[in-house]
Length: 386
Image (tube, rainbow, N blue to C red; front, top):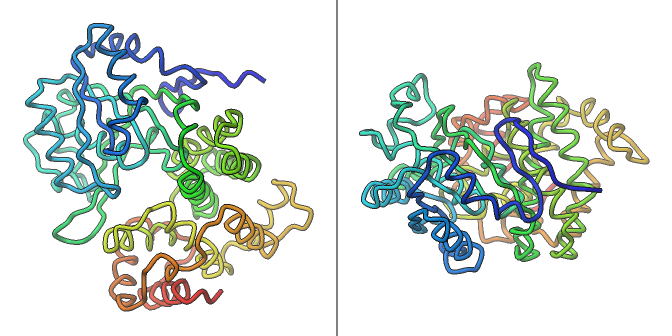
């Protein structure tokens, strides 16, 4: 089967092994002459980024690199990137990496031509209208992990260091104008990160599927995303060079971020404050939280989950078989079972419960839990009490 394609949903998406070679041509077609390559410190010195920069330079494009980005990118990281964009007189952003680099890079591009501070465009009310759209440079996304799907997102999750909270920066034009999704760039991802990012993609698709509200297109995408992850994530974890598995996971990741325009839920409502306070990996947090949140939402989602298991071809359908599968795949991927396993205790449970209620993703959870319930979920998650 030829796993190569070009489509235009939700943006121009060039998929397939080796497609990264077309990057200089595609950048020039967008009018970009001096791109800033935004990536993370771990990738900046690897051949993936070095080759991208070399190919851009060979094509006559004056590429610069910015990589001062934390695993949970901060407002400071973004504004430092804005200064790098301006000082280098760049005219486009090529964001290369996982969710951290993609989120930071999109925010840098959004603000590069503005006189706004990052917190002036937090996703509240009509803040996004403050942006002068004519000054947003072209954005090209090159994902190197199969997790966040940020390459097809219109928002970035950025940590406000002063408030110790993750905030969502939103603008419709943050959606990259071009995605080059080359599964060969994900081959070097270690098994642990393959597992964590893959479970992040699962959380996006699953919460989108369970979210209330009428959006059958997003719901349909989420079902196929979950199916691909169920089939191919164990293969990608077991053999990182399995290009077929890597290909399907890369698409499933983008599908999750496309589907969650329907909404997310309690996994993310808790993962966001936990990530901000403890600087823990977002995908790992979602993987740990998943079964506890499923149980907390059971009364509202068990009929939907029964339908999902039927669609996915489970031998036994219903909520319990699906929960058993979640627990089994986590174990197969060697993911931790509790927050305690990654050094997080429940001393701030009440505070995190309040932060979870106030997180935007809580509003589309199937049940509108209160702070006490969120604190209880957290305490169970620390202790491992399903």
